[in-house]
Image (cartoon, rainbow, N blue to C red; front, side, top):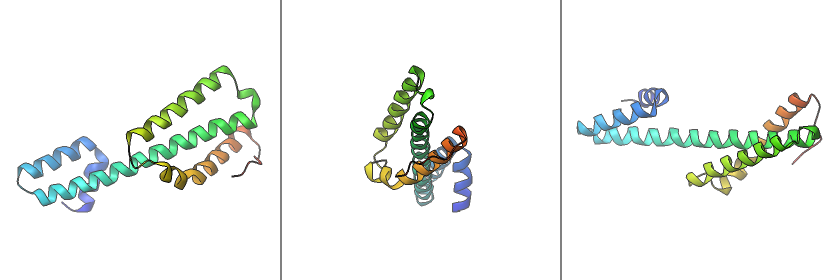
Length: 130
């Protein structure tokens, strides 16, 4: 299978990709299976990184919204913040490459997106910068 074919199977379903890799192994096509496995690992890594970026962005949006619109800071807001922080940390603990270096590498991007989100939600320009 070509890289494009592997990508198509992987983006359709991780399960189907895994089944296809198993079929290649059972057919003795170990090199092709190994290649598919590497493609799957790379795609899943990107997916995990994207998910952590989104969670960090959402967490930052929540905090900035609470700063810019203080009336949003209710008990429910506090609970949501607590849950979001725990979810973010749980994701990081589960996957070794989502370490502090990775978080530092996405921090400014996540902050900028969160700031833009809050400016839209609060309908005002924020004077908060990193």
